[in-house]
Length: 115
Image (cartoon, rainbow, N blue to C red; front, side, top):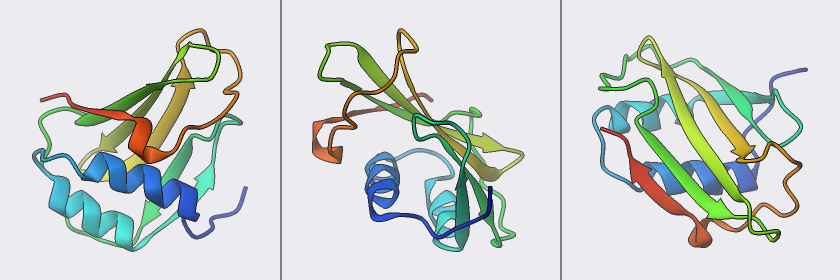
């Protein structure tokens, strides 16, 4: 799959995660500003390819996540993965691993800082 610009929906989800304060957030934001993405899973997970060379100092490889209930009541999770100081992946999955029925808008998600 080819690298492409971040879609408006993806940008909304990223902005939601970056609305929280956590170590390395500002550098991660810079990395994302110069990033291209590619979808890696059907449920919407995607990986980043950033030209920013600055390294983010985070306490955990997943510094922030968000969760929300799908229309069937099963929780959807969204995790931001950092690998060696670089934004690597936005993972989206459902607790029971079933297909996501409807990806809720950012305002319905709850953001959790994992530090």
